[in-house]
Amino acid sequence: MSSTQRSDRHPLNPLEPLIEGIESNEALDQPAKLVSDKVGEILKPGTLKDLISGTQIGHALHPMLTDVVIGSFTSATALDLIGGDSDGRAAERLIALGIAAYPPTALTGVSDWADSEYGNDSVRRIGLVHAATNGAALALYAASLAARRRGSRGKGVFLGLLGAGALGAGGYLGGHLTFAKGIGADQTIFDPGPTEWTDATGADELTAGEAKRVVVDDTPVLLFSQGDKTFAIHDRCSHRGCSLADGEIEDGVVTCPCHGSRFGLENGSLKKGPATQPQPAFKTRERDGRIEIRLAT
Image (cartoon, rainbow, N blue to C red; front, side, top):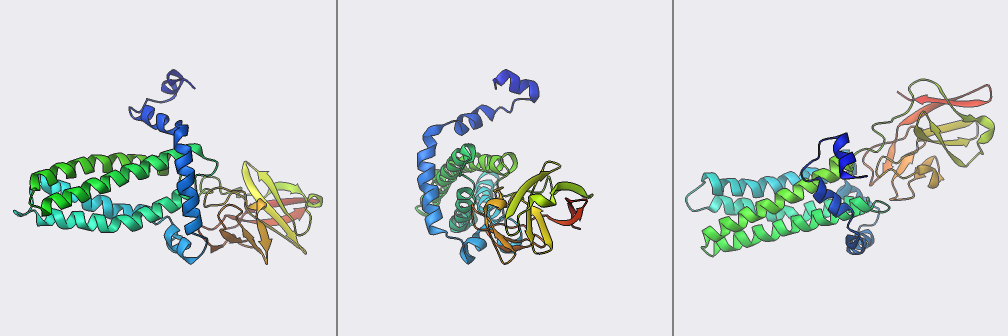
């Protein structure tokens, strides 16, 4: 699509060419894959991965931690600009706090990114530049703290200003990943499924013990027949959107084939992360040889 066509659709964001340049840069793919594969090797599915992902709190943990880093660093820079204590110790303490909070913040962020990059080139590339920019901000603020402690407060302030600029760029890219690319958002939130009884498939098209994926009013649905019961939950994993119908089903629980999240077929309940939200579940009934569903309330 040409830039003229895009501007006809909506006002051109002055930073949009930069974003498009990063998203189309194939040179970023190889280092991104190396980092992502290494993260996947280290952060295996389990309790630690769930904790880092935010499974226990019901949404991604990373955005909460970024507030500590960004707030500490920018508060230090604000004191430099508007005036703080006479010896500058308050700004030093704030920078030290931001540095201390950076490792867990980066860990949660890279975990979320590694879960999202497969099959999504734009997320892979933007995420890598986002991480590199934030790393530059960390290095600049660390150098700023070192300069201040050596007595070079002016140099420390200057390095802090540069760090704030890098932090702002990283924050912008992080916002793009969250709000434009939907990383960390519940992937089912905008199409939970029909609220009225709606035809899904023929009863004779279901095979006992086998998952079947159907689309009902534009919503992908996983159907699973066992005995005299038919279960139905949203097929798009709330974590990163993978099809649950491709996963293994055992003892009434389906395991996402992409990242290992587990959901109960009876009510969509979240059994195991890294997902943070359950799946929308549907009531089912057979009528005139057809299976109908509606959203369970």
